[in-house]
Structure formats: C-alpha cells, structure tokens
Length: 631
View 1 (cartoon, helix red, strand yellow):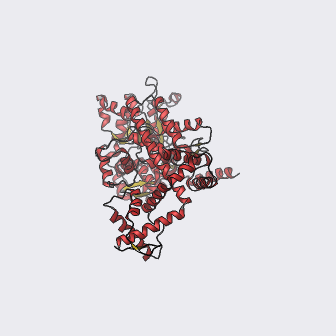
View 2 (cartoon, rainbow, N blue to C red):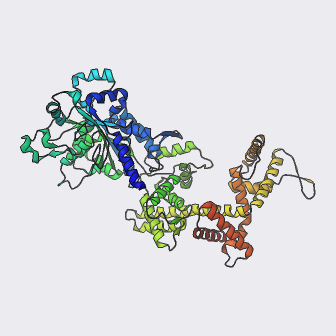
View 3 (cartoon, one colour):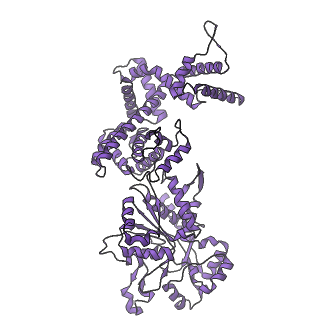
C-alpha cells in the first residue's frame, strides 16, 4: 500500500501545480514573477544554478552534475559559464548549436540526459514554471500574442523583451476562436516531458534515403485537407516534428554530423534567426537549445568538408574529455557497478583504484619536464602532494596539452574486464591482481587498440601493478603495526625525546646508567628516511615537529601517535621494516605456531573490520605481501 499511496500523493501534488487562465490573468503572474518569461537557454542556466554552486580551487562546482559526472570540473565550468551563462544573457552565443565533442563513454550523453531530466523536474518548480498558449502543439510562448507595435510599450511596463512571432496556427485561432481578443486567449502551465514530447525532443538520423524532413518540421495531415480545403491551412498541418515539440526547451541532435545536409540547413535559420521553415507557411518562431554530440574523428571530417562551412560558425564546440583524476575514475567504476548486477560481489579495497591508475595512465601525455614522470603527473592531477612540485605545475601541465584526455581506455572497457574477472573467479570476491590480469588479457580482444598502443598499455599495467604493490605493503604494514601498537608508541616517544634534545642543543640521560648522552642521530635518521626526508631537510622537519608539540601543549592537548600524519607514516614504516622478518614468517609459513597464528588472525580481523576486506581478500592480500617480502 505504501507505493500505491505514494503514487496517489504524486498525482495530487502534480494536480496542484496545474494552472489555466486567460492571457490577462497570465500577465498578472508576469507582474509578480517576470522570470517566468525566461528564454530556453536562460531556463537551462538557472536550472543548473538552482541546484547549487560552490567554489572549488578557483573553479565553480555545480551540484547539478554531482553523482553523475566525475572529474570534469574544468569542462563543466567552461560549458556552464562560457555557453549557458552567456546565452542566458542573450549574447550572440545563444545563436549557436552546442556540440559536445569527446571520446566514447566520456560523459557526453550523460550530460545531455542530465539536462533533459533536469528540465523535466525544474518545470515542476515555481522557479522553472513554463506557460504556453492552451492547445498549441508547439507549446507557444503566450507573449507572441502581443502585436509588434505594442512590444516597446510592453517592455516599458513589464521589463520583458518579446522575441518571435505568433505561429500560423495560433494566428488563425486568435481570429476564429477568440475574434481577435488577445486578452481572452487561454493560457496553461505546461510540464516538460521527453516521453510526452513536451519541450524536449530527440532527433536521431536513420537511412538518408528513407528519412523524411517531416521528422524535424512536421508534415501535412492529408486526412484533413478535404475538410479545410488547402495544404496551406495551418489546421491541415501536423506540427509534430522534433523542432516543433522541443520548442521552449531543448532538442538533442544525435549523430548530428552524420545527418544528410537538408536536415542541417534547417538548423542554420533556427540558430541564427530563431525560426525555421515548415510546409507552406511563413517562418515559424522557435526558442530552444540545440545540443549535439560527436567524437573528434567525425568532427575533423565534418570541418574538412567545405560544404559545411556555413555551419562551422553556427557551432560552439565544447570538449568533453575523459576524466584524468584517479579518485574520480574510481567513483565512475563504483557508480557503474552499483547500477549493474555485480553489486553483490565483494571488490577488495584498492582494486578499482589500481584499475583507475592504469586507465588514467593511458590518457595522459608524457610531460615535457624531464624531471617529472607519468606517475608523478598522475598524482599531481589527483590532487596529491608530490615533492618538488606545486599546484602551479599542474596548471602548466594542463596548458602543455589542451586536448589531453581525448584518447585512452574508456570506463566501459574496464567495467567489462571487471565483469570478466568476476565470472572467471569461483569466489564472490576479486582483488586488484584479478582486475589487472583481466585488463591485460582483454587488450588482445580490443580491436581498436594498435600494436604500439598495446605495448604502451602493457607497460602501464606493470606501472599500476607496482603502485598496487606499494599500496598492499602499506595496508599490511598498518594492520601489523596496530598489533604492535605499544612498540609504535615507544618508538615515537623515543624519537620525540631525541628531537627535543637536538633542537634545544641539549643532552639526554641514559635510563640505565644515568649518564648524559648525545641525541641518537642514527635513530632519528632511520625514521626520517622512511618518508624521504633528506639530510638537508632534517633540521626544518624536526623543528616543525617541535613547533607542533608546543602548539598542542598551549591548547592543553597531548601530542600522540596521530598528531602528525607524516611522522606517523615514518614510524609505521620503520616499525614495519623492523618487523619484516616476522611478517615474512607469519604470512608464508604453512604451519604457523600458536603465536604466529594469533598474529595472522589479528591482522586479518583488522583488515576486515577496519579496512573493508572480506575473509578471502584479506588472506589473499597477506599471502601476496608475504611473497613480495620474500623476493
């Protein structure tokens, strides 16, 4: 009954939104809410803004795209600001077709679908309310009823500029049904719906020999010609083409660049002048966003054809490259898995991250800086700290290759290979090695990958494997160190005592003999070297640790194991290095003794409880790290 009740509630809520009144009553709505008269481009821009905007590292982050588009903040910022914002301000950019260009599975269709679904929901809100002449198949703007000679006066009174002219059908209805009384023309609130063909249209080209231009502009209704006596009577015409139905909203032009020329020419007039030709009528006004999408190869072929020159200047191209952030790529895979029937399978921590590392490597261009390798570039793009480089370097890297991300492995390939790994394995648990193995095997089956690319991709799989090896060792390291927590705390306190003596140029007292001794430089360096602190950098690092201790003391807080992230990492690595022999024995011996078995069980329990492994993947991780340490 709950779902039935929700259906009923939805119907009742929808009914409350319905409105019907005369043109004069509609003008009262405009007095209170002038934004109702916004253009299609303005409506899309305000819809995106209405969802919320935040600032992220100098870029605007639009919540409208959250949970659907990942890692494309630069592209989305450019799309919204350079196209939608400018078009909303009625700048010339609104007279252009929006063409999203990018590689397969890069997010172009997702962006278009988000805009469509967004408009459907936005038209249900007060901010996005849309009104049209009642019974009009094109959902025409009621303001088209205002005669040209009164539009300046209308602007002075309402502050709204009217564009477009009354369609032939509504011009006839005004005279025949309403006897020229504009104020009596009925107006209704409409709700965008792609399914019901209200304000949202989709055009997909088919066989050029069989596809009719009527799919775009409507057609003559031969069954009514006898009744109305003429093909030029608007009542004998079906205004049901995609350009008709998409009026006031948006139309998706799928595979636009593959269309026959006669279909494209209609877009010239529509984009530049805001009207198109249909049947034996004068030009018909339409206000709609036209968005198309294509790949780079098709676009290059299109612009190389001189026949298409007139359309070049009517198109604004927005690149939608692949995502170049490992963390965002991982989110893409998680989302695709959640939407699939694989969600019951346990995917071990870092399996998707490892796959993402490989995928991003295939999309990156080799940096021109000799001191930087691809892995460092990958980490910088992911927002990680890389010694010797800053955020300024990231900006310079992006400028080196403006088209970076337009090639490489697509997310669907990765998901397909993960599916293959799941099917191959008997258990409902896969790890990073299973995924890498499947990615490697799949390269031979990927028809579009050249031999040269295949060789490069094999190198990237090796690099991703190396990154995973480091991650796996750190994971086990943390789990093992937890079992030796007291040892970690003792090592930390010992280091802090020595650092304090070093910075204060004082001596320590030997706890056994009581004699004064110099700070233990060997111990301090053994810890600091674990995180790459050089000889020259040791003094600033030690002083920074001491300052942190003082800051904690002033606030009445004690400095402990978790107070300094880098120092904690160094302590963990040092302790793990000291425990390597113990780890080797406990992870590789076939018949561990009782003490070893207890340690193994503690580590597995921690991997399951704290780090998200299941029993299978935790045991596999321990065996793998044991094999790495035994090499």
